[in-house]
Each structure stands twice: as C-alpha cells, then as structure tokens.
Amino acid sequence: MAEAAPKKDKKEVKTKRPSALKRDLQNQKKRLINRSHKAQVLTAVRTLSASLSNKEAANVTQEKLNAIYSLMDKGVKRGVFKANKAARTKSRLTARLGKV
Image 1 (cartoon, rainbow, N blue to C red):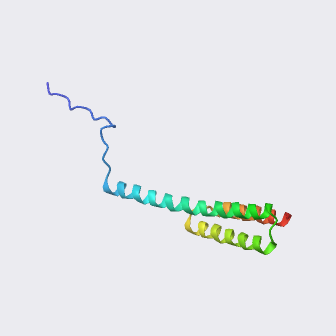
Image 2: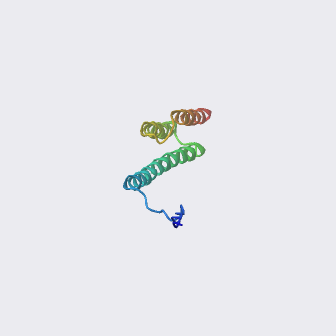
Image 3: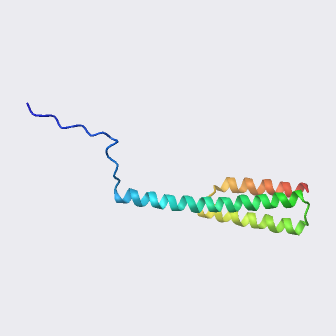
C-alpha cells in the first residue's frame, strides 16, 4: 500500500503572505495614529473639566470647548470616531458648560 501523506498541523503554518504582512503593518500604524488622536481629545476634555471645576472665565472655557469641537470633527472625518459619538460628546460638554 502507498503511504499516506503526513497531515499538516495548522500551528506549523506560520508564514503569511506579503499582502497580509503589509496589511498588518498598515493596521498597526493606523491604530497608533487613532490612539494618539483619542488621547488628544481626552486630554482636551480633562482640561475643560478642570477649568469648569476651577470656575475659570467663560471665554477661556469656550475656547477649550471650540478646540474639542475641532478635534472631534477631525476625528469623524478621519474615521477615528463615529459621527453620533462626536455629536453626543459635544452635546454633553455643551450642556455641562451651560450649567456653570
């Protein structure tokens, strides 16, 4: 009888195609860019919260709110945030600013 071909384990196959490796690199780069942008937004939100708790002047807090609006809109344009999340965040921050 003929010998059966040895079965390949799925764990043995570790090589990826060049296109898959390139896609992995692109995903890693994009993930770092997105994390950086999200960190900028969170930092801006924290500074706004701090200025609201310190009861700074209204024009200073309005400038910070405008900066957050800009960052959120850029994030939506780049695909970092979904449109509804940006709208919800901006609405909540505006409401907090209105209470003060």
